[in-house]
Image (cartoon, helix red, strand yellow):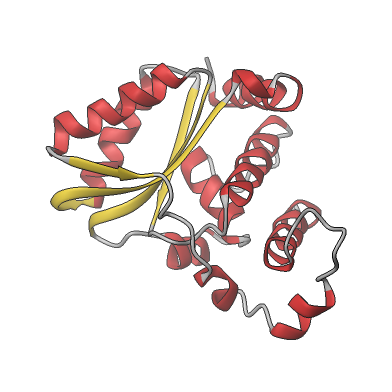
Length: 197
């Protein structure tokens, strides 16, 4: 199945049958430093085994929350489904959406890992939890002990990178909103990428 078809299938399920889609975001720590190229190779080979799993990796503490990750997946899937993607690789498209950038170089400056990594955030969307478990098992078999912490991949460093000021946050803070002002600012910027394209 082509990447575009996989994106259409996952997008359709995410919109209409949310319970059939698993989204995973976690901080992953390896026991030693590894080449980022080698890490990407392992991820790509694992994902090739199933077209119903898409992934990305970034430096830790880039996303604000699980909703930020969900929206980045949604916008990335939609971009491929509508053929409005910036990158040909899903993992890079996801980083563009996550970082609210429209240039690959800028997204990699914000989210990229560098030449080597011992710690990173892993983002996966799949049709079943078994696919995610298989991916995590593959990481363990290739790199030894892997520590996974689903709570510690979130932070607020993206706010300063995007120069979100206090005035903006205070102007969008009101009691009846389900979203906090920080997430509203990030999601607005992410949505603007779609307008530009």
